[in-house]
Length: 461
Image (cartoon, rainbow, N blue to C red; front, side, top):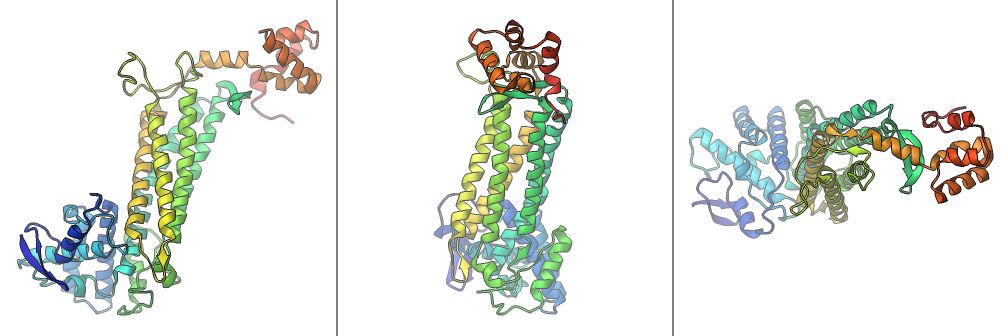
């Protein structure tokens, strides 16, 4: 152990740790969950502090030599080289001050190593005076929350959803000529093509991609520059604009200074909205996953219209059983994301006066939601959708046995007669054609034309 000092006095810190006294106090104060702050959030801290040092240099407040040293250490944070030095639990001070100071101390001590000075000497870089210059945890942590989430959604979630969309789109095209029976209320309905059915999933994932991109738009306003309560005390008036400009250049995302700093620090409405969008995406994926596993149910006593890839044994007691585990995985992911979204909504209510004090929990929930949605979508695309095959014989049998083809008879014999035909066919276990001929309601050639399912899947004038 080594001794370091902060405003509260001396503190023993593990010798190899790059963090200091303030972080160690948080480690001791919050032995709660064992869940550290999200990796994406920590690396977002590195991005924002890099921009802050550069802005302070441009404003003449920080010498170039110091700015260079801070940037060098921040780059290591961004690259994940210093992840082990961020031990603070998610359930900490609601402003995230412990995590902000964790970063400040790590940068200061890493620079000590560059300079060959003792760790903890705060020379040549002071964690508060230099790394935290013109900043408060109260504006930095909300800023990092937005920046890190926007980056995670841009770099991970959007590509994952696009990948799932593309795999589903390929199946929709491959299945476009396979006519099957439709189902509403879980009951037989009029025909459609398997490609049309999958086109619905394609449209859902296309909208999911757009919705994920909209999340980025919601996160572009940054709290930086508000400092303690939104007034900007101790902050150069040009500082927030410069930080946003640097982050725009560095990330390609349109970050801008918040229109109102009191809202940006006191409320977390943008994050609640993002949580709602992620929940919407989760609902879409649930629909797709459930449909696919139901269409593949069986293989002999279910619908059995799709053959799903066998990825692992399905039972420890029933040999040969294979289950739709990828659908089950994605449904569980979606339930989890929905629950995380509810957590964010509850956190969003707890903005008291000039600060919301649940920001670490929001960061944990939203980063977790983005990670599991992204991984779930890619895994489902690769290990399920890509290997789906249609069971054409079963699909054909279901179409031929369906009584709902009777709908096409309405223009010929009327709704009431068509209903009688369907009921008789069902009660006497006959086909629609057999009943129509038996009751002399239509000629055979007209029946064949009317009941051709290929003519039912596209609307006619």
